[in-house]
Image 1 (cartoon, protein in one colour):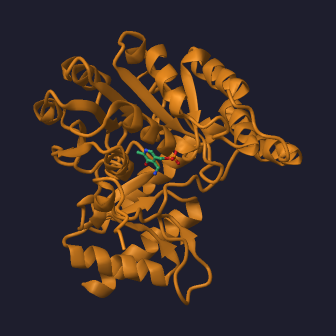
Image 2 (cartoon, protein in one colour; image 1 turned 30 degrees about the vertical axis):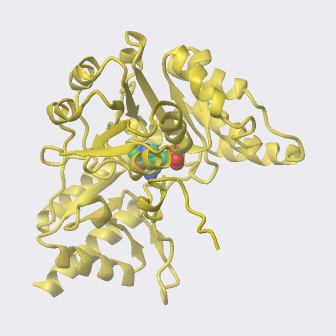
Length: 361
Ligand code: PMP
């Protein structure tokens, strides 16, 4: 029988391991493994989704005009230069599909988000991983990693899973230094956690080779709805729209996202609450001998002395129903990524790590 084989590169993709949501034998768990907002979506978004559910027999809007207008108004952007996707994952895939193919290279940092590699391989392109400097995006290394084949350069700013970010000036230097026919993609999944940060919007206004991607999955608390968006030069957005399915974002997702983006008070509340408990938890863990880099996101990357200590602590937390994320797959085997939960969750994590350290000592 003839062997049916997928396209080259596809079998190099390992199945994506999402954040675990349960522990065998433990009934009451707190999920801190996927950087979700512990406060949930804005009540206005929940109401809008419930209302929209009554029209689910109809296809959704295919041009997302209402959501794009709401995003544009809130962020001071041009609605024509926004594209919406089923999560920013889908937009990352569109970018690779449209701009990188066999023989082309897609650059990202060593602790960069998993979808960059997956989407590059799915498009038949070659993923190229570039070293960071102490878990921070290294612009010089990225520029040195560029070749004539480089078509896309992805950085998340702030980055997942390190939680660190680089300055606007550094980002501009990167945009100026990459090959003329390459696109810099600024992944702003965690941008809203940084007060006053525009995720690169101003940079995009002055250049034709920069795109930013954003999501409703993090501060907006709508990971289950699957909505993301991108902003960029008109020509690039027009290209991405050619490969977008006409009904790629559901009716409920569009309605929820629109209400969520307009509820700026709620976003501010979530940002402040996150910052408060992030600082508290980072301090508590540091006192226990578990340091982390200053995080600009809704998680911290807690560093342990060894891989076995990180794994033992993870097991200990699990037995208390606290599910955090091992990041060995991101080449960070001695660390655990801990999403900032609500006050109860943060206190429970600190108490558990304290008990773990006391027992392990
Ligand atoms: N970029 C980064 C840096 C992320 O951490 C995530 C989610 N973990 C995404 C993109 C994708 O988010 P979504 O598809 O839910 O919009």
